[in-house]
Image 1: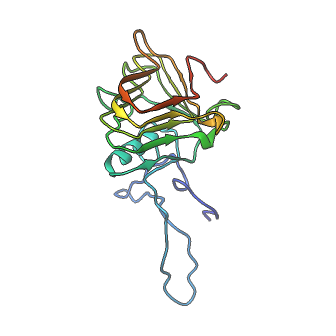
Image 2 (image 1 turned 90 degrees about the horizontal axis):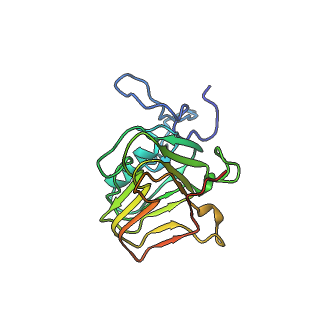
Image 3 (image 1 turned 90 degrees about the vertical axis):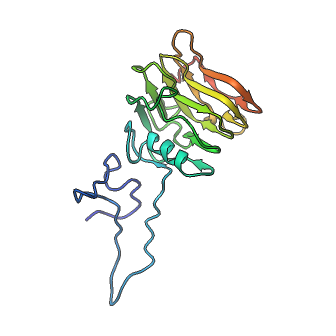
Length: 212
């Protein structure tokens, strides 16, 4: 038996559906009694992050790709805590895919204290092998980053260019778990690079300080 209760990301959240090979996990348990069963709702979400994989289904990278592809505001839903180690360089402007649509929110504040730091962010995004920004947003507005430890040792860690209306962190008096920790900018790099960043709020973050 597959058991009862929610299965965010399937029985194995780290797995990837292989429809051609007949291995996939998007299924629902129903009770059939004397007739057909209708109205089954899988509740499929393009925004749910269910594993710490670098790429593909259920990953942070896949969320960014989905949010870029689906016009309009999109907000992450973290159902996992832990360290996301990025080893794939998405472009020459960021290790994660460059943010290309307005209104994208990456908020892991709901996982605070559930990861490697008992009193810190539950999600750590790290890359120490690629000379590029971890996060890059250009020519987009209304981007929100909250509750994540961004960790690198090369180039800028987070970069915004030609962007406005953004929220990086949040008022600690409202929710201290909105804070981002940002460490490890490379030689000549910055924790947060702001190139023509207008009407944006950067508050309650810890730059150059680890959550230890």
